[in-house]
Structure formats: C-alpha cells, structure tokens
Image 1 (cartoon, helix red, strand yellow):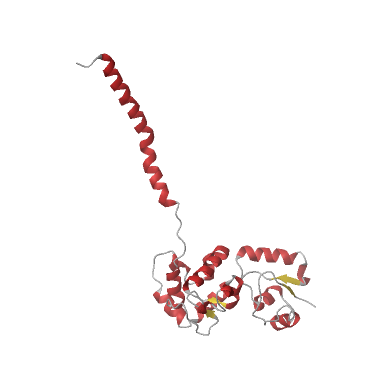
Image 2: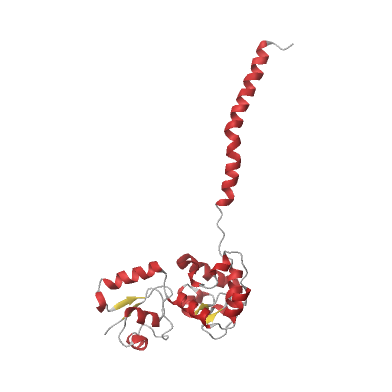
Length: 221
C-alpha cells in the first residue's frame, strides 16, 4: 500500500504537468499559424510573360518593347539590363526576371498595367497575352504610359525639385524610366523633344534614346 508521502509526490507531479500544459499548449498552434502568414510570395513572372508576350521570352515585334516582360530599351538600360544584353529579348529568361525584380522594387507592378493582376489573382493570362502579343493598341498605349512615367513618389520629387526654380528651371536630373519626349513634355521645354536633344547633344553623344538616371540635362539655353 503506497505511503502518504508517495501519494503526495504523485499529486505534486501531476499538478506541475497540468500547469506546464496550460502554458505551452495554446502557444503551439498560434506559432504554427503565424509561420505561413509571414511568407510573402513575389510576382508570378510566368503569368506576366504569358499575358504580355504569350510567354515568348525572346520576342521582338518591333513595337519598342522586348522580351517576355515587354521592357522598352530605355527602362532596360535604366535598371542595369545593358550588363546582360543590349535589349531584353537578347537576354535570358533569368536575366529578364532579374531586371523585372529591380523594377518591382522601385515602382511595384505598375509597369505592367494590363497584366499585373494576373500575377496575384490566380487567373490565367492567355487571352490578355494574345491581345498584347498581337499588337493591341490600347495595351501598348497603357504599357508605354507606365514605362515612361516614374512612380508617383518620383513624380512628386521631380515636381518639388523643379518648382523651387519656378517655370524657368534650366536643368533636369534624369529619373529611372524617363525618356526624352516625356522630359520635354513634363518640363515644357521650348522646342520640344528635338530642341531638347539638340541642346544636350554633348551629353547624349550616343543618341536621344541613350539617357541614364542621374544625368543632368539642360532645358533652356
């Protein structure tokens, strides 16, 4: 027959175990539930490419946009693509995605206005890709607008920089995604794009399409 001391020892051990279970028990499921929520998947580049170019990573239709993600030449260079190849369609799929990731870090998915939703919604992009790949004018216009203009934060920065000098600002610092025609329109440069190029021929010695972030261009004589 167990002694009173042994019975008290067993009761004490059971009490300690119950206390530990009450503390540790609820924490286990909570930690497990919190784990997956912390993972944030990136864009589905295959779906974006399927929408933009029918998944053809080396396409060049002559519309000014190249490769699976349809990146124009100025943007490709602005985000370092020239290190891989002269144009996106001449680079590998992995290299195009690497530049795509840089663009997303800087501007989000706004660079693909018609196809970005396919990267997160789970819906297929084959019909949109067919329209884009066949040269649909509305898709091209939307993409051109997105590529050419910097994101809202950059636009606010640019407006803030030029507003300090008023309407007579004489220089402009090139931002990622800029092209000469957009700069001429945004700054109301006298004589438009051609005059802006003529005024900056020394800096743009490789042609009007070869501009890079950080360059300072003259707007007025």
